[in-house]
Length: 191
Image (cartoon, rainbow, N blue to C red; front, top):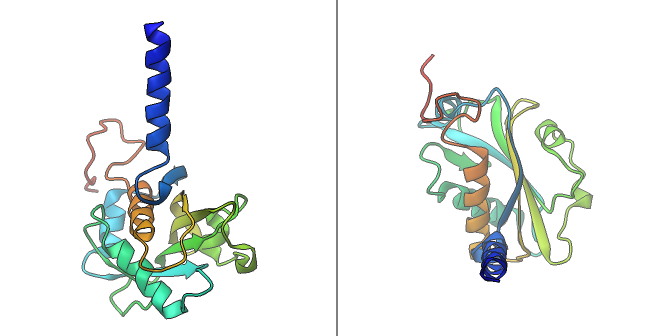
């Protein structure tokens, strides 16, 4: 009987954690492709602008205000220590690398079309009060990493849900160690 009660309590605790903190942030479908290394991101971002393309937004928010809110949330992430995420990169940016963030992604949208700029923006939007956000770190049309987070729908750019979502998305997309590395200690590999 104790095992059953313990198991039920554990399942309830895990379910509470799965709904996330602010805004019910839940991460799914993270893929890190062989091109990715922590050193690659550092090379792309070190003292540079990092280009971001943002697709989808709450309909009442002006595009400039929305772009600023999203890139501010990305730059506020404690996980990322290099680079300046921006939709208006300067000449310091490495032109063949960028991040694509799709708000209201459908379950059938994936990173390759996002990197290629082939997303149907008319299909974007929340579903049943939840908003799926697809992120892709791209090298031209190739996907380097991708992840998807789902959050409670929000309609204003100052929502704390946006910061929580961007932090979780970047945490999943930019792991500090390489998944296929045998020593699993992390840190960039020097080539």
